[in-house]
Length: 152
Image 1: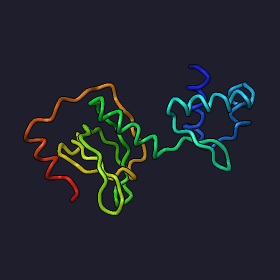
Image 2: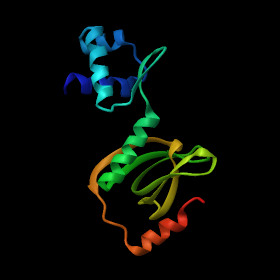
Image 3: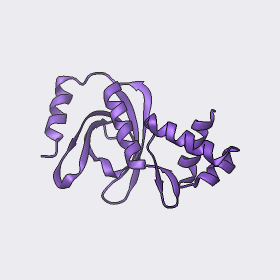
Image 4: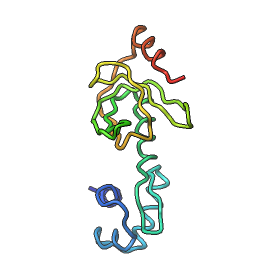
């Protein structure tokens, strides 16, 4: 594993870390950590600096995963916290992400767990992973189901 990938994994595993903590864990200087973070940010990794140190912006990471799944027609695995605070893991075939009521973003997708079209509030997705598996173009019936599921 290269150093920058290890840096990202340290942030994902441990949450917020200072440049000094990252340097100690990776066996490099603070200056190297700061340079690596700048390069990672330039490559689109959502690392931000807060008063307590660096961290991965989870909400931004989820949105980027959704975008990659949509554009690549890839299955998306999510951890979803519903309105009753119940957490579930689901594999989705995403179709569209759109803004809706109250300023919230929604993801409309075929949910393999429920074997039906579902609408997911994006701010309730706690983790998203793009899988290698591609899914087929939806047929007319599924498109119709997705259209009727849109939050209007």
